[in-house]
Length: 251
Image (cartoon, rainbow, N blue to C red; front, side):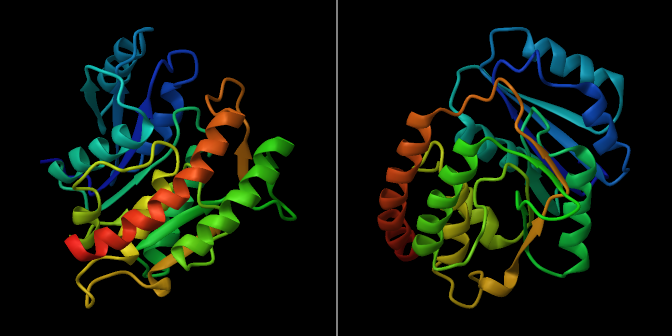
């Protein structure tokens, strides 16, 4: 078991052109932070790159999935793997580092400083911030977040930012114990599971969450999200709403 207590999961599918060792090195330079690189069945050399990054320094663990299972399942398996490494805090971010390492580290600091259980990165364009998003991502995201907030009964500005951190708890462990229904809206489903845990004395409330505006976010070329994916994710919210009611009865 590692001495590092915070582990960040980075799911990767054919990311050899975008996964940069220097970004990971900046994260693990903090002796308490480790990175789990999840190879989601890549066939472009990503796996070899991951092992080279692992050899370059301490604090990097590689989880290889032989078949492509999609981002949601890759993240879930990576989070469970982080638990076996002794994680007290577990989070995830995207392989393209649209959220820079320094902003992710700031997110972790906010999680501890505010004594909450979940810290969500938010791509809110405000004075002093550099948030580079396409119009499609911005306006599509606003529609999606409005519906997601209604499903969750929780006011969240940005549910789909790829940077999130969670304190490990029994509720979180249960919440990642089974595959997500959704491929793209799994962030919403995970938050919903935390809020709808059957243990009423342990389930999360609004006070357990904090949303932190990022200082920098870049819309990196090569992103795999398409208009069809955004539409699919929106329809998935309806399925998630029903699934969460069943989740509350089962957990």
